[in-house]
Structure formats: C-alpha cells, structure tokens
Length: 92
Image (cartoon, rainbow, N blue to C red; front, side, top):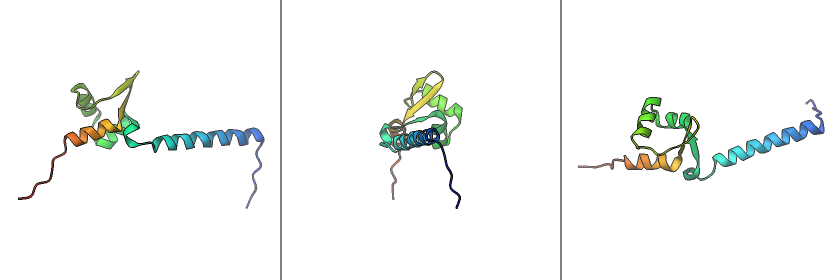
C-alpha cells in the first residue's frame, strides 16, 4: 500500500469539498415533500416529453417555480398531480 502526502492547504480543500458533498446529500434526503426537482428530473421521473411538461405548466396541471429560464417543481406538487389522477382498483 502506498502512502500519499498532501499539504495542509490540499487537505483543507479536500475537507471543504467533502463537507459540500455531505450537505448536498443531506439536502437531497430532506423530507420528499420539501424537496425541489428541476425540469430535467421532472421529465425523467414522469417519463414525459419537454412539450408535455410545458403543456402541463401552461394548463395549470402542475405547479412550478421559475427562476430565469430554470423551472423547479416541489415533490409535494408532483405527488398531488399523481394523487389527483389516481384511479382506484375495482373488482366485479
């Protein structure tokens, strides 16, 4: 096994980056209802095209936030969309 020696500055930079990664992972693990996803994640999650996503926003089917050209969705709004279109199973 080889030893790797790094300077104090390199160590501090590495520790800072690890803390940023930890913060990002912790944020992603926040309560799902409080989490936001961007448009790309939403399209992949729902397996719909960009055009369908745009139509849903235009028609008020899904709530969203927009900052500049970036679109975000609350996971709780995605859940409401799915719950609102849920069809109960029936048995004859």
